[in-house]
Image 1 (cartoon, one colour):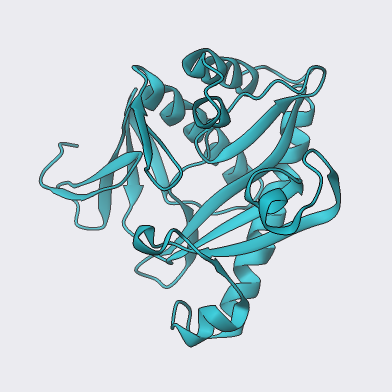
Image 2 (image 1 turned 60 degrees about the vertical axis):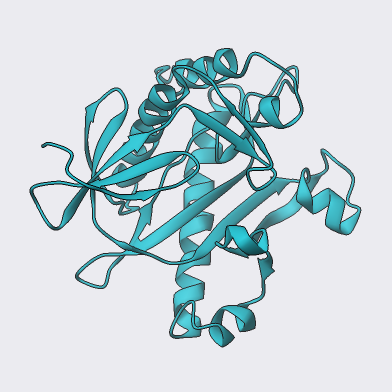
Length: 239
C-alpha cells in the first residue's frame, strides 16, 4: 500500500488515502501536545512506539470481541485502517481520580473510584473539548439516538475491563483512558484512533511512577523512556 494525498492531520497522526477507497493509511507522528495544543514538543521515536503499542492493544481487544478499524501494521510508523466516519465524541473511562476530574470536582488526586466513571467530551479543539451530557450529544446531533450513546459506554467499559486486567498483570495501574469510535460503510461502530500513552494514564503499581503523556504535561522528563517501558510491559508474556 502506498500513501497518496493527505486527508487529515491531527495532533498525533496523519491520515492518507491509498489505492483502496475503503481503507486509509495512518501515520503516527513524533509530536507531543498538551492543554489543547497550548504546549507543544516532539520526541523522536514516540510515533513508532505508539504505533506498536496501539497495534498490540487493538489486536488484544479484537481477540476479546471489540471490533476495531485496524487492518494491519505496515511499518514502524504506519497502520492500514478501515475508513470510518469518526463520531465527534471522546469517550473517557476513569478508574482513579486525577487530571481534569480532580480540578472540576475537587476529588482527591489518586483516589480509586468506587466504580468506573465514563464521560463524554466534544471532539472540538476550538471549544477546548468540553464535557458533554447525553442530552447535549442528542441536541447537537452528534449521534442520532440515545441507544448509540449506551453502545459507546458499554464498549468503553468492556475495553476498560480487558485492559485494566491486562496491565494489572504487568504491574501497571490503568488510571484512565480516552477512546474514539467511528462508523464504517456498513454502519458498524468500530474502535478507532489509538490506545497508547498519549491517550491513557499508566502508573506503576509499586512506585506510582507516571508512564504516560503526563511526563510531558508536568515536565517530568524521560518521555520516550516511559513509553519504551510501557511497550516492554505490553509485549511481556503472562506468567
